[in-house]
Image 1: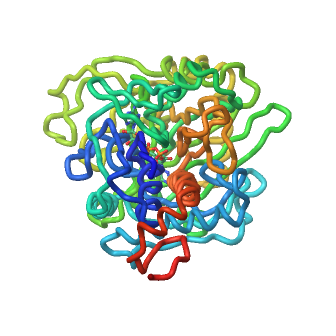
Image 2 (image 1 turned 180 degrees about the vertical axis):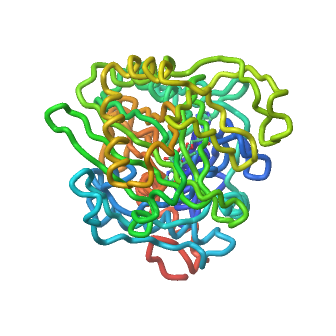
Length: 475
Ligand SMILES: Cc1cc2nc3c(=O)[nH]c(=O)nc-3n(C[C@H](O)[C@H](O)[C@H](O)COP(=O)(O)OP(=O)(O)OC[C@H]3O[C@@H](n4cnc5c(N)ncnc54)[C@H](O)[C@@H]3O)c2cc1C
């Protein structure tokens, strides 16, 4: 049986391992290396790393449509893609402490009042609830450990030698027969480096950048009643620009700071527990721009321009009494509100890290966006028309970004690199942008491995009466 090394214990890596052991693949042949912590030690501020990766501290919304969350159907067709997504959703339910609370919202009709300003993308979403993700993570981790899967925590893989099939960390070398490269967004730079170093063929990707918008939920309630995770969109075909609202959080909605490559950007998550209710709504306004030369470098430069290191006066975490006495210097993105709304608190009770800017600061942001910010200005202006009570009662955290590094060309049957058949790219490191698709890609690769080991697994499993995915009778 092949020795499998998975780099990244995120959604993609964990689903791959689960599919393997569910089908009798021996857990002790699977090693998962992650630069973060196991689910017992992972802290809330470790947003991107550790068991279940960025998905582990996300807002737990599992989108259920092949047009959302990245590419799956392009590799395996619509029907198979939906089947794989089902498996991922079932895994979240399987390890959920209260699976009956996982619910699906499925909006069906585009409401008239948003026309003619916006279109609305309609698709089902399963809501797991951020608060449950920690428990899900622990249950899932225990299951994999019980199956013998080996985890290496707090360890960054710094090099992969495709010729000799080894993955190296600062003080160890892991030989593999098959590598699943599942490093997510936090490892995009590493993936890019490996692709360049090995001259792998790639597909160019567009830029995706914008802001995280935040306002009291009441202004959007009419639309939320139709679609909880609404996706407003508009397209300017002739300009190669399209915009969409992205990852909407309501009821207990918090803005989250993300660090990638030493710069900061914003995202959001929602809590399910009523105790966290703040009656806010936040969502990304994300712009996709085609035709920019070196889009990855362009996005990184822009993000770095709208980050600053500054002293912040009068912020005492969530402790109101400490305000005015507290001085801190930190690097972060920016926050603007036309009505001087305060930033909100994080779910841990500290202020979201972002530097306040005024009109002048916003002009600098517009300059950094090189003309593209006007699309965001227009998007917000039109939201003010569609949601009349909104007026200037909002704020934006700048920037929100989806780094789409050049996508390596892979074999569609098993997502292995075209030139290196024993290395599989999955999840955000390939072409996913969400939990369901990332998990589905991991599962897809695992299925292919199982298929290649069908006869050995048959012998290995001669006592089994449950072999997920494969139809083998108990012997
Ligand atoms: C705040 C936030 C909220 C989100 N909310 C949602 C949501 O509600 N719904 C949704 O569908 N998507 C959401 N997303 C996106 C989603 O989490 C990702 O698309 C998904 O987790 C990607 O899965 P992955 O396995 O590819 O990568 P990840 O889950 O990011 O996992 C990658 C793992 O690789 C590890 N790693 C990286 N580099 C190395 C290295 N060199 N060596 C060792 N380990 C390494 C990291 O520590 C990490 O644990 C959210 C993301 C964030 C940040």
